[in-house]
Image 1: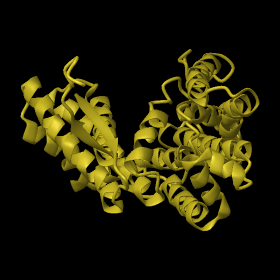
Image 2: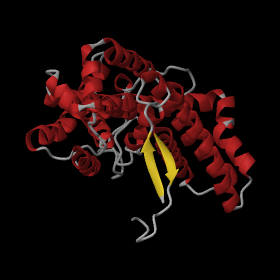
Image 3: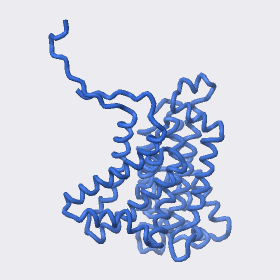
Image 4: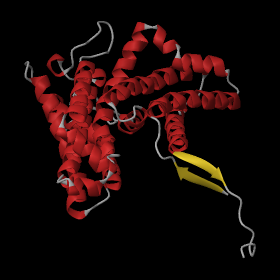
Length: 358
């Protein structure tokens, strides 16, 4: 019989080593998968994890992919530390893109105020969408996992309805898309000749602010205590509902900002296919980064690497389109599995025969 015994204390070195072990295990599992598919595993792993790092353009594309993952991941880390499980960042990302991009989609206005207004609107939109599960949890003790997840599908369908209707480009030949954003409504390019934009710098700024809040501010201590022991947080005078609201507002706001960056950056308009799963992938980013700002920065680039490398492998080796999602799923599976082994000891105990006692 197999039994798991909690370890008295997990080494801090082991805590930060587990993501590296998860990456290594994912590569091993990937080799097995490619062997089963009849593909050259060495070539496939090289294309996915090495080749994108050798070219400036693919590195810039990694920055494009990593920007929303980092923004959403750092927002989710606040809630996950406090035991507030916001699984619907994809919905908040979508609403942020919709609210932030509504103005240039309807009216081709110009001016220096347009882009800041869009970013602010996207943040407010994401926060408003996250306020729904915050209200339901604090007032009716509703499960925020289910509420945020279901609201994701509502947000995606709402975007589709509006893009097929009021936001559709009148000159777009009846295609379900808004008009292209003008220069005032698009993010400045960070690296000339690429799609990398200044949103990445704002993501780095968000990481720095998050580090200060989590390590140098009383709010970070409240989040930590509530996640480790809600009863101790109550005895310490911390208002749990306040922490729930703040965590969901932070995660919703950053997800909404990421959505606005996506609409005003690489996409340049509102389309039904704008939500591509960044909100769900960012959950892996948050856990792979150990819910720390520095870890999330590196995890965001690792996940971005799977996007870029996975697309390249599909083209060069005729692999299925699901290869990227499979790799991301293996990352999460490997991380959680190694976390269990790091937190618990596996004990094999023999079953006592019936009637042997006494």
